[in-house]
Image 1 (cartoon, rainbow, N blue to C red):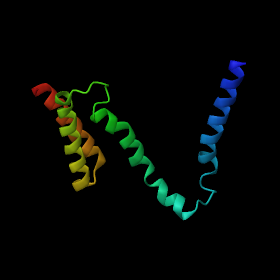
Image 2 (cartoon, rainbow, N blue to C red):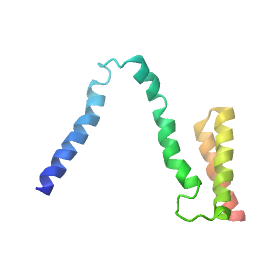
Image 3 (cartoon, one colour):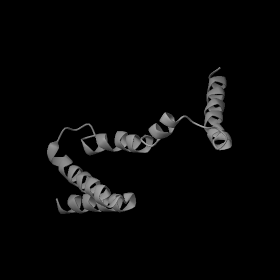
Image 4 (cartoon, one colour):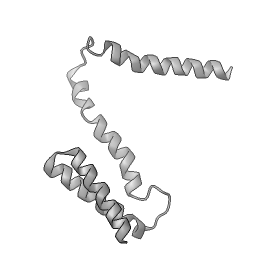
Length: 103
């Protein structure tokens, strides 16, 4: 019975994802959906990164979070000014590694 449920869930997941690949260019989405989809990637990135930056390890030790907060702030400034996401990722990770190494 468990295998049947897992198989059905797998087929449903595959079908829902494959439908966008197979029929995505044939379906016209409403304008409000198109405009809302522009915010999906930033929202997903924020949902993943903010808990990690602000103590996602379950320990509320603000001193240990300072390198992550500084690196994330610098990365945000770089992407805001340059509009270059790879540059901001390189800057943020480089800053984080440097601060961890120094401190």
